[in-house]
Image (tube, rainbow, N blue to C red; front, side, top):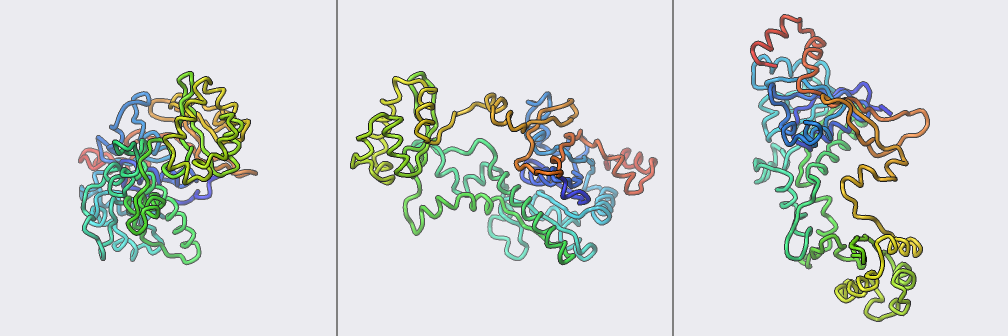
Length: 399
């Protein structure tokens, strides 16, 4: 399962958005050469030490890559980077500050005339279009800030307090769109021989993911209310307490399920025809009263007993798992979704990327998480630098 084998990606990346995109390219077999600052590297290496001394974000987004340390502001480093891109790269990815890659000579406008097949993907908070930059182009953009600007935070949380998502979804959204756009550009290049520039905005990526509440609030209508873990516009749909202190997550989608829920789960069949609850919009309007009915019905039951009834009624349900429970999730275990990757701290568990290929395609690439600068000497030698030249670059702190 390495359809991108033979494709080389050179990436000037940090944090999550670009590393997440390029790790997925590496999963599919691309060679990803990660440029890092000498001494410190990608600053995500220092976010925490939760994975046997390594940072959780870094382990997640950087397996199967090669780490080349390079002080890109050093004149000799600029020559190394230029040679690397012009001689090796099919794709350049960067999420430096807007305009920084262009100042380093790594912009599409500078590189494309010299290498017409090159694909350059620029990821930024608000977009980096030199023709139409917009007033936010140079604003600093971190995940929480983009969650706020895209309106996500305004519709997430409780009635009393807005909340951000736990995972960094603005970064993830941008990384996913970078990944899919790069795949599309590679397909186009296979037909035309030409590369292109891809401009990915975190704001635009997350605004797309927030389009349902945008349309719900169309033409000045009220937005979906913040309802915690419950669905804002479908009810009952969310967490409910059982009598043993456990929590059951359940969701209804249609009137057939509502009738089954009343009869089999609540064991109150007449409730199905109660005029207060005979359509979803009515149940949403009466959610306070209906919630109390459900809580009262669940009070004599354990969470396991509630789930048993839900299964009998064919009502969708789930546990609210902790991280420890996800590590041990029986479905992930049964489907063999865990493997190991190497790291500077030895083997680590890693989840296989979503999507399984049948036949003889094999599995995705799952190579080690690199140590800082682990591949510097090998890559420089590949570019034709002699041992003495590499030693001189090290002495000058260029690499």
